[in-house]
Image 1 (tube, rainbow, N blue to C red):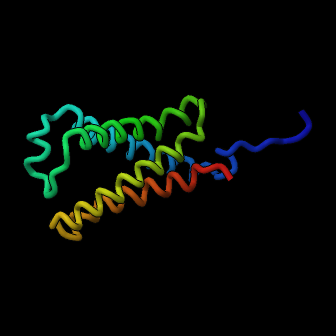
Image 2 (cartoon, one colour):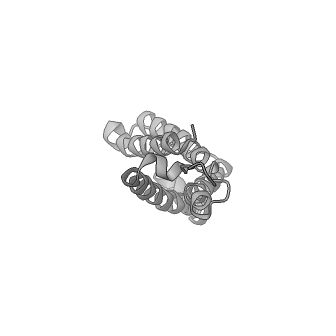
Image 3 (cartoon, rainbow, N blue to C red):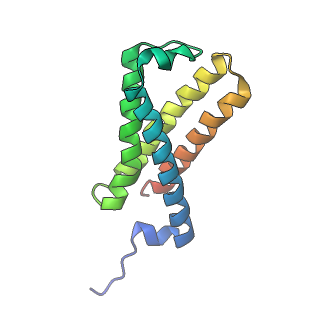
Length: 134
């Protein structure tokens, strides 16, 4: 093999790779927990403190999307099977966080409460952007 081929991981640098993996693992843990709670906790308890009430089927749908997105952040790149799914998972989670930020703002919880879903959405967007193959 005469030509040198650079992998995607080596082209972005070791420091950025470590940072991206750290953010991906943090986001995966967060979404795995949040999605799991939407699937396990009884609907009455979930909606009791919510500023806006959503149908139970919608909350379960979001929970499934969050769990699958969390797995999609880590498993494709870790197993090197379809790693192009990682930016798609991150993009989907960023879209969910746009909705979460909007609901938090318009649900009367204020800007300070909306900062958390906004930052999580920005982090998911950064993962999607940096993991997208050019």
